Amino acid sequence: MENYHNIAVLPGDLNGITVTDAALKVVKAAENKLTRPIQHTRFDYNADYFIKHDMKELGQKELDELKKYDQIFLGAIGDPGKIKPGILEVGILLKLRQAFDQYVNLRPVILPDGVPSVIVGKTAKDINFEICRENSEGLYVDAGWIEKKGTDEEAGYQIMKCTYKGVKRLAEFALKRAVERKKADKPVMHFVFKTNVLVYAASPWQRVFEEYKNRTDIDVRYMHIDNFLMQMLINPKQFDVVLTENMFGDIATDAGAIIQGGIGTAVSGNINPTGSFPSMFEPIHGTAPDKWYGADGKYDASLIQQVKPEAAFLSYAMLLEQVGEVKAAEAIKNAALENVRNPQYKEKTLDQLTDAACNYVKEA
Image (tube, rainbow, N blue to C red):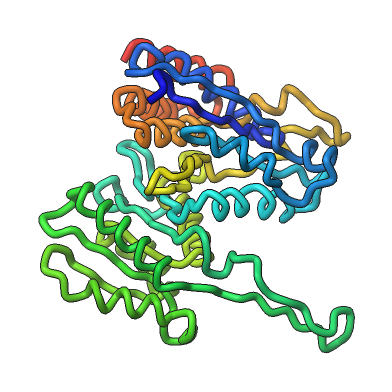
């Protein structure tokens, strides 16, 4: 084992770079709370890199380089002024998730104490669950075709691929999370799909659910995705750990980000539970071109001071938890939440929020 944590850093584009730089300053402030030091190596795999190398996706060269690292920290990708949306998302995010078998997208939906939710009357006691999104297959396998393109009869087909193996290993991960969370005497697992309509893709989901539903050590339930989304707003307290398909999870977790206090505190872990490849951690917000380019379309340094970096802080804290650095993770997490709870939070600049987090971590 190396005597340091070997972390690959992909700042990405625009304000992905901004929040990554801020997060690394806070991590530096927490170095006395680490059991082993951290070595960061930066890779500028972004819009400029794709243009320079005439790429549509990361190649074997880039994958071989990244797989040497313990974990990956990603800022955010996308620069619509240079590359149309979709190319980087598929060529970087989906490529890494599938190439590195990051088959769990772990998204906590936890409302911090003292932070208001858009759901009136709900507190941290009501909104505290996790969504385990299947991250390597489903509707995001990038498979399909277009018929009669350019005619009135044009039709697009997108394949949803769900396998028994994929659902089974996701359920095993979700069960472990539910037991570890110890939210109640008997953990609760919700399988979420659309078995009444997607009858073919539903077959593996139904099969795994049947294997789990009669367990006595855990309360296992099923819910259609549309009902789940409604119940998130009506009665989120009923949920503990939820597992669902890739696209359903993509939509549900964005809704979850809003009810937990906003997208600015939402994080995502693309997890390879076996450790055979690195996992990747990222804030779920985008690159915010409007906080990078001014009205004239040119870079405006003053705009980035409006960017909030807390999701990046929390994402890095999640990475630290993954590598066993619990003390440093807790300090950084609390620093981010302390910022968010500040009554003047909206008026604070990026530099002020970063400095406040660094000071909190040093004194914690």
